[in-house]
Image 1 (tube, one colour):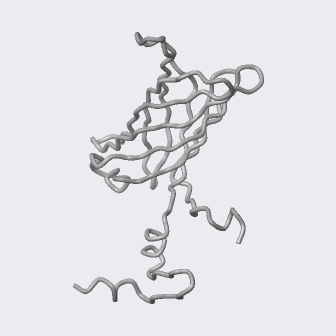
Image 2 (spheres, rainbow, N blue to C red):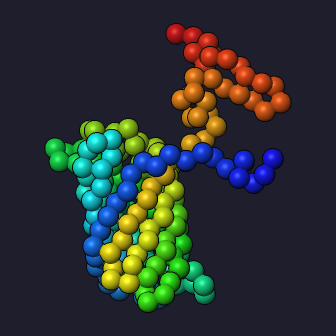
Length: 168
């Protein structure tokens, strides 16, 4: 079994596209760069807007990022998340940012389905500041088993229909 076989399967949740970011220096010791972005995307057929702010902690080869964000849909639906990861510079001030996005328990309305979702992301920023974010849900073994309707334990085999394990 190779390393790839041990990785959790991923499902593309959504993509975000944006045209620019706002930069500022936070009043911290030492001063840290803060970056805020806005973008748009589609989730389950619904158009949404995304807003996030991250703080960048410089590193030798990669910078560390940590922040918060929100997705919102017209009509009051919201999904709040925390974001963390690493950023590395590319040619001509381009950037590649990778990390984890964890949605909180306070997702409401049509975005309530994102509650407690853990996702990985990759952001590609071009030299002009335009960016494209891809977000994948990380599917753990129990979630995958529930979606497939069965649980399989390595070495034991299939336990069959999961509904049999949850008497009602």
